[in-house]
Amino acid sequence: MIRINYFLLVLFFAMGSVFAQNKNAQDEFWKQLQAHCGKAYSGKLNTEPAPKDFADKKLSMYVMSCSDSEIKIPFYVGDDHSRTWVFTKTKVGIQLKHDHRLKDGSEDKITQYGGTTTNTGASQIQFFPADQETTDLIPAASANVWWVTVDGNQYTYNLRKANSPNHFQVSFDLSKEIPVPERPWGH
Image 1: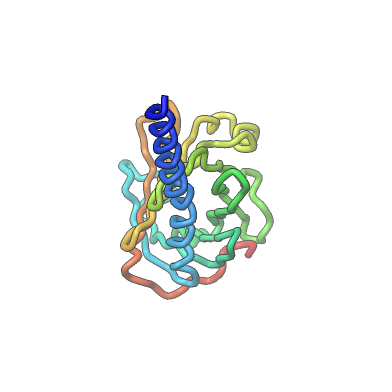
Image 2 (image 1 turned 90 degrees about the vertical axis):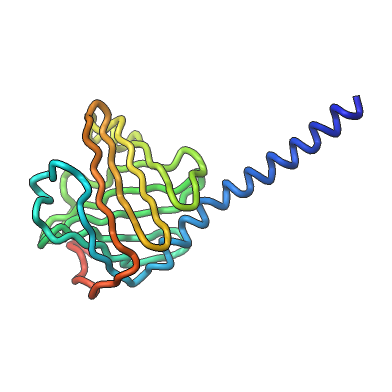
């Protein structure tokens, strides 16, 4: 009986240690994003065939603003400055939303879609399955999953759509800064 209780006690503390390490994974991921605040980077599309909106366009990202609860990263596709990835810390995890704007700064009719992490993820990768708001806005995107990786040298943004063999990925070289682009539309 004492052995079993001792075993359970050791298991409880070990699980607590693993949970604490995993809980810190989102904080570490956040810190890695924040480390690039105010910096811009060139990107490349890693998707074949390239979506027509992206083919032969200069891609860049700019870690425009960072706080303890929100990080905004505009994603530029050629002269199109409509897209901003918005990461927000919530009580349940990190949320990723796609803020799409028109040239006049007003919201696009398809905007604020995305999802929130459903687990702690890892310090270099976080997954964002589509949330209910996304499902209501874009029913076909109800099973979408976005994920972002960030490490010392590379940031990747990924999208996998359900029932599609295609995987969208754009990567950015974090070792080479580029000049900061103009602010995105609506910001």
